[in-house]
Image (cartoon, rainbow over all chains, first blue to last red):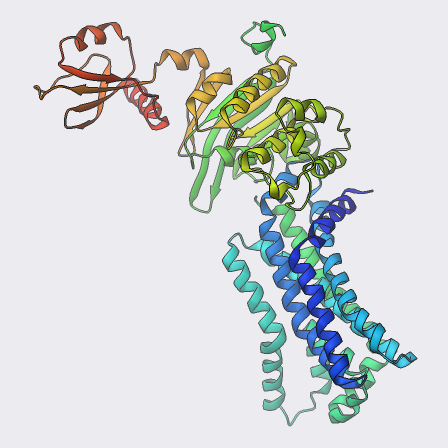
Length: 263
Length: 312
């Protein structure tokens, strides 16, 4: 087993014993189960779950990542004194947290889905997109949290920046986007808004999830443009690649900063 | 164990082999000085004491030795290799024990040691003996979060020494250890040294360093103020003397003593030289009590600064 996998394995077993990750799994499980019990098996449940994926997962991932990094700082220092390559150590601890968090999400959402959902091919496909999007957002926001923690020595400052970033991607970005669209409503901005969507992983995930639902048709002309682009093979490739870029860039940036960091 | 082996090579008249060679090493955190142009060498088979108060630059130096920090200027060579370009191979032959050892809290001590062994790709065969020696055998199956600070530090000792590194870097290693285990640890260090291993021992406790080290470097405010063999350090006779008088007398001076504090009838002196003249003088004073407490590090530095000024 290589060093990253070894570190990842021990980090993984350490994280899954953490009461917060158990709490996170149970919370998702209860929430999804309640949605099915009170909402029935209809698109509303999917939309509610989508909101959980788009708001709660980035927040929990970014907070869990940053807490975990700052709390294990002394241990990271001890590991750095061992014959371990810094890059492998970073990837190992990243994998060690992102995998259990993704598993928590998959378990928390899947069990009620399996129990309650009336399965067909379309529903299965939508469920798969939901899971993949949730996992991607977990990977992205843990990577961002690690980058913030590596770049900021001060815990409080790191927390502040992480929260601000979450707030920016969930709310402020959309506000700015709407403002631009409102101010320039006389111009054809559909292509421009597609491009802007790629700059926010939460928006990108939202579009991918909404297009799985029939309500995309209710979004008017813009919805049709989005549907045409993201529904095509080209759109699928672009959105998939962009999500991968959103995962890779903070990972590699964090990796670079970590290898040059003073501990 | 042969006593000759307890003495470093240079003291035994053999050719010294430098294990650590620090050249004009500086580290600045922006405008703040961590350490400034410090240079020293540590020979093979030596227990090298690195003494200084908190915030003096001890941990910064250690972090530079381990390449956890990047130096602002200067070089560190360990096993004749530059730490910048060979840190991985150097760390393979090094053990490190921080003062506040921490590990995955949910892991058992045994699992943690297995983890450390797997990272070093090294068997855990020596662990049982080490655990027995430091009274850790019953704690092996316990979770790290359940261990007391001292017991956790013992686990740190085990992870530092189980792979028998050629160089061990210890940063305030006895923090939290009880006096019995501490003595056992000092004895263990001497035995370890007798195998030709090198130990870099950082501490803020002068008596502790005096107990185990062959040579001592003293660091203060990021600068090396002294680099002495233990014998020379002892010759400096860092002693404090507290006199309590029965009644007020005219101001007086004592030979080879510097008055550092006076409150009422209590006089506090720092002694640096021969005591024979002093004792004679003491008999002329109306003494109620005489106390010889251990000197603090600051007082040791005072002696060094006094020497420095005299030299200038």
